[in-house]
Amino acid sequence: MKENSYNKYSNWHDLVSNSINTAEDLAKHLPVDISGIKRVTECYPMRINPYYLSLMINKGEHIRKQAVPDPREIEDISGSDDPLCEERQSPVPNLTHRYPDRVLFMVSNQCAMYCRFCMRKRKVGHPFTVTDSTINSGIDYIRKNNTIREVIISGGDPLLLEDDAINRILKDLRSIRHIEILRIHTRVPGALPQRITKNLAAILRQYHPLFINTHFNHPDEITNQAALSCAVLADAGIPLGCQTVLLKGVNDNPSVMQTLMKKLLTIRVRPYYIHHPDVVRGSSHFRTTIKEGLGIMRSLHGYASGLCVPQYVIDLPGGGGKIPLLPEYIREVSDENLNVPNYKGEIFNYPAGI
Ligand SMILES: *Cc1c(COP(=O)(O)O)cnc(C)c1O
Ligand code: SF4
Image 1 (cartoon, rainbow, N blue to C red):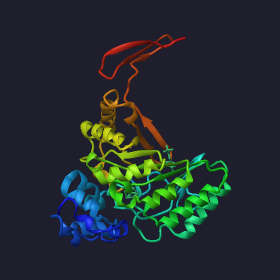
Image 2 (cartoon, helix red, strand yellow):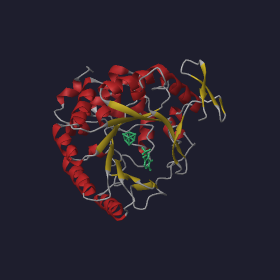
Image 3 (cartoon, rainbow, N blue to C red):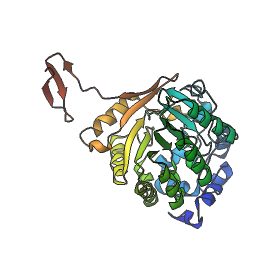
Image 4 (cartoon, protein in one colour):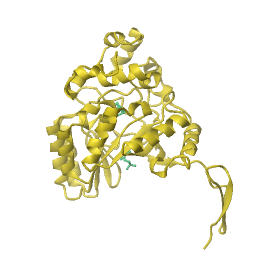
């Protein structure tokens, strides 16, 4: 398959509808274990759109692993389907209210691709997990709770909805007086950049302050098309962030992560979080150690612009929320003195008192 063979599809709808979702179809493009993949897709759907397929074929294993089902997904008996207890903290279906001032609102069960490590594996791609009625009850809940000042519109991927549906949701949320900030979480810029049309950007820009957090996991995902899609959004005045997931065999490497963070900044995307993978059943083969994650953070501090150093976070099982983890810098602190190494490991004293 040539680098740009997906170009025959003229728009994002065609790319989505020509996605690969069976083992047999995938086998036409890659040597795969058909029966293993079949067993996985009975539990967790597969979707690989032609754009991401060509990226996989051209770039290799670190891209492939994110999208091709692996029998270990159904052999894994560790973790849980919903480690963050999103369902328990849902006052209405598909809306999680964990923090006092903001809610996570899931408005789509579709994605540009189904990431094998997804922390919402239990829901994404399954029919009827999101309906007009759950969207309406979510909006009603937000309207009635005036401590909520930010809505994180998520899914699945909200940008898999049609333009009209996105417009309606944003319009309804913007009509609520206590909502200050709208935020969209999407993997589309890196996994289906053709979805970012001028028309979509024109809709989004009506609802500022609106932020978008993207999801890139490897520098090879930052293609010319991905860069262009981010430019369209940034030119619409939308501040862009990135939530990367630390993944074994994909980006668990200081130099890959450094390149990714620096490259994101060049396409006007500011790294926001590196997530340690959640303890989700079916994803343990992607997990690395916290120690490794902290080592990667150490390789960023001082060696990459502060603009492109995200926070490294864990999301506490049981719905405890996100916690930032920092490599240990403080060697000693008293009322008078702080003793710390700099990024090169040289030791400094700093006056810690008045
Ligand atoms: C991650 C998350 C948020 C947003 O957290 P930020 O730290 O503001 O990005 C909100 N609600 C839930 C349930 C979350 O999991
Ligand atoms: S795009 Fe996001 S919600 Fe969809 S499968 Fe990937 S990680 Fe999960």
